[in-house]
Length: 348
Ligand code: SF4
Ligand code: SF4
Image 1 (cartoon, rainbow, N blue to C red):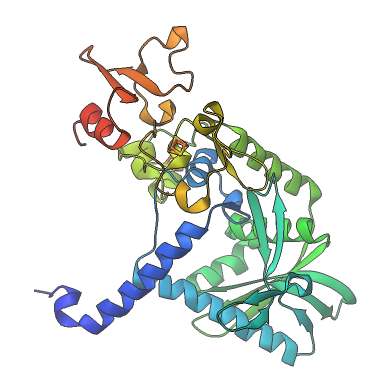
Image 2: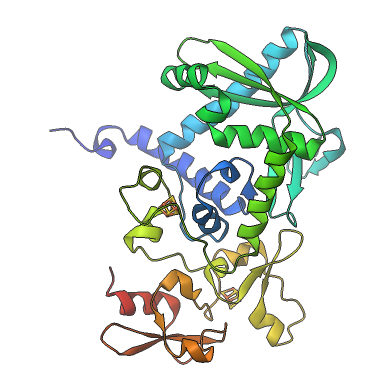
């Protein structure tokens, strides 16, 4: 019988836990739609992600694997420079003082879209390609295992990883460049492949139209399937809530009173109604919400009592009708969202 890892190797367990703590911190900070996720097919998945419906945090081992990919980026940039290319890996206009070290640091190349609710980061800008030595291109670096690398060689970037293709495209769109040098390195045998990706304005406009619809929609849009065995759904981080009845997280973004506003902000309509000095919800508050949280009805999926009369019109409470005919209230005068879910769905 194989022993659980914490009985065999407590050191490894402690290390993985430290990685997971970092992953959790990063999840809390990832509050916008990234260029990569925008390349996914299912708009419902993107909406769930933007509304923090599910918290998906990689385990410690997987987080370490992701970090290894970032270390590989630095090596690739060093390789490019050694090969004679000029690489600008950070934006020289982004200088800020790191208060811990007292040093001026520079941030990644970043472009913001759709009221700053969508964002693209590029791994750098690069110049020196033999086919266009003076042209400055965006730079996107990935590493892949042998199986994935071979797939890339066979299928080409767009078919292999639409998410990476979207990253390249939005990086060019945001930085005003018309080529992106896509570099991939095989982790198993150090094979390099690169390609110059051509800017596709129509593709970017379509991607940003999709982002705008997701950001502007108060309710989750239809997904790619209702069937949990659908290939795309089986690997979706949002499947537990979308198809399997798991409770959506209680936070401001799943609350009927919140809405995204300009500058990547979120406002609380309840605070607006009450004439509070500011309706802006600080990022650290968004993650927990308040005691007046009321679920967005489409996340609950039950019949809203009196819906015809506009009862679900974003008030301080919403009454739902259970299949037994009983009414259950979420919000003011009824149950808090946490208790409501357990009551309405019997803790499923
Ligand atoms: S489970 Fe399927 S339909 Fe639901 S969000 Fe994920 S991909 Fe979309
Ligand atoms: S009512 Fe509370 S949980 Fe809802 S958006 Fe406002 S602050 Fe957030």
